[in-house]
Length: 113
Length: 112
Image (tube, rainbow over all chains, first blue to last red; front, top):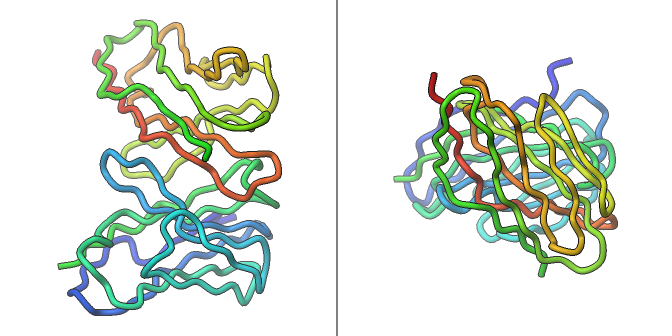
């Protein structure tokens, strides 16, 4: 099993550009989520999904879109990148919900100039 | 809303020293509590968890006890190793919830 994979590992964008961070899992997990990690802030939840076709907002959803068309994939879209979105982004999955063990991907380091 | 507060780091210890990282929480009811660890350059991984009051989670020599009366879940290890150098995150979630609330993380450096 590959577990949770994220691409790309690093990305540099200019302000106003859009891009999609990819996340995939091969464990047949229903629950998937996106976090951003900023120095001194811990991890903050952006969006989550409890199954294909179902998504909901977390603590910091503004500027981000998600969709869940398959169980395996949960892409995160930045609509118009801003310097405030410079961060490390982690995708996680678990069998059903947040109380289950979360399996994290290796992260994507995004810099917005 | 629910929140987690953990001691600020960095914490620097010599090998074989005792470790305690404090974590307290604010939440209604009886949330589930977790410690996740992030090794350099990697994603987070679950270290241990406890789902009800007085439960003790343990793994790799680390322990934490769910104390409802003091709303705490302190992480302890009797003898740390250089390989324990990492960032440690305390987290909670409500048992019917779909979001983990993380503390800010505590960086631990263990020197030979």
